[in-house]
Image 1: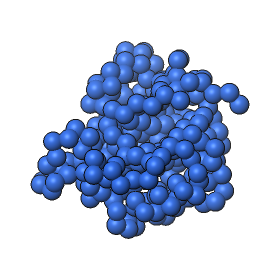
Image 2: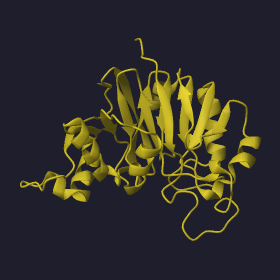
Image 3: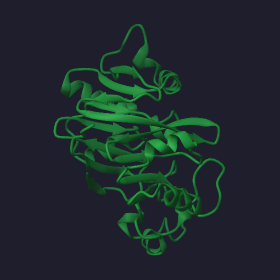
Length: 258
């Protein structure tokens, strides 16, 4: 299969609390390094003709303004946790300027949560100016958004099924601590891999740094970026300095062409 050339922008690389965390004065949250300022995790995927976002975080409005995204064709959701869906209301700006509902690709579990979180968008009598959403139900079968082929990858966030996504030679996985062997096969052959790393210590539902490095070594992917980072991981510069070759921390605003 041929894939279009893609530009990936990291809109946010932080965990659910973001970095700095409210009320915290640790060395990471107090850092003056802009790479230690992390909005909630999301990426922008752009081809020559199609623009999509993976997840709408609580920072979605600011992320779209910061990245100057004037056109958005679709949103793809990984799972229904609040830090991944809370910004969806602001899609109404795209509804207004593009004069159409937004295509939202999500599994049934995530759709149910979105309807609960934004009931006014799905009411029988709709108030003017509410978000207009056109659900596209996905599972683990490949699908296409515009000219961008997408392969879902099922991963586990403790007991919650979460979808990662492969876009050509680029694979993005967030909020996971386990990946079944059959799903690892979908990742192999990627040139760039993005994986969540919350901290160094073990966590109940996220990969920690040692486990993430072990997985990267197993999959043998040339370049990996870690995302969904908490202040507990450490300062960007210090952690990057100890990472193995071919791995690095992602940061807000990082752009990759593939």
